[in-house]
Image 1: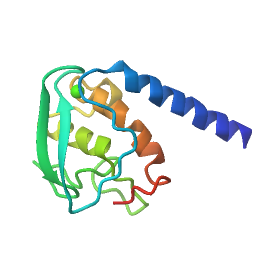
Image 2 (image 1 turned 120 degrees about the vertical axis):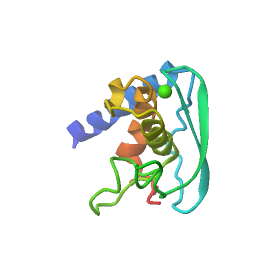
Image 3 (image 1 turned 180 degrees about the vertical axis):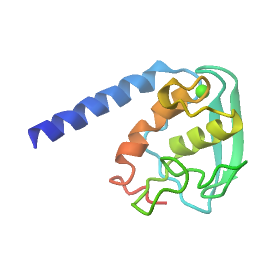
Image 4 (image 1 turned 90 degrees about the vertical axis):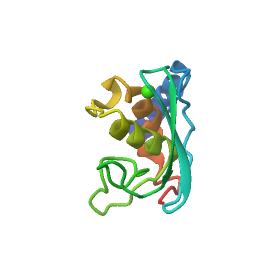
Length: 130
Ligand SMILES: [Ca+2]
């Protein structure tokens, strides 16, 4: 139990520090988004480059990517999924920039990936179920 709590605490600390690291696209904490709603995704080229915005309906496919806004790849396999703003930003970035999906190391979308880490980890617990 203590081990689990300290793991969560260290993840929180990591998330907070990475949140301050980038000036371009913003980490929006864990902001839930609902499937079927229209949301403006924002990402930047590089890690603090030119901002790009894209209005998209959450849950739609976009340029060959599916389930835009779901945290994790594609549409998942049926387990409860988190749907959150930072995950949407990352999804759109990967598709738009032909990302290699190098996760945190991706040239354009690595910062978006780091911003989405808290959403991915805690989104379901926070009730971001789409
Ligand atoms: Ca970026």
